[in-house]
Length: 123
Image 1 (spheres, helix red, strand yellow):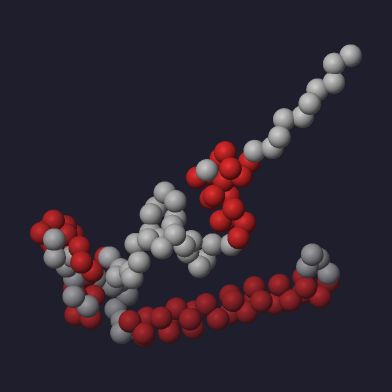
Image 2 (image 1 turned 90 degrees about the vertical axis):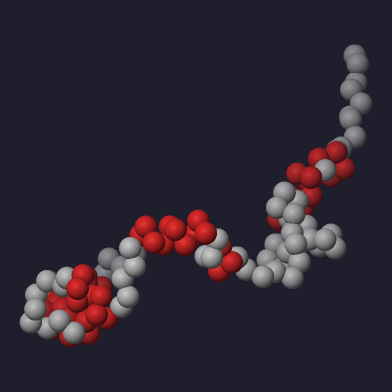
């Protein structure tokens, strides 16, 4: 698709527009950072805007256990990761019926996948 003359022309014009607007866009990004004429942005300039924390300090916080509580979500029900069932025997709401059927087949392969053996004719 998109092989018509009109779409080719539009692609060409969009590319030219990008070339034309690139210097203005770069200047706008630099003004947003507050470094119009300075050129390169250094860590000192960034430290004035935001707090810079060394990586070692972040690792120490995680080892002490202060940062562990922030990463976990509070959940009302507990779900078994293997069977995906909660304590009431219900599947999660995001699972479709087809996924539920597959999960049940994995859990109990004898009950859902069995069929009667066919009798063979002997000649």
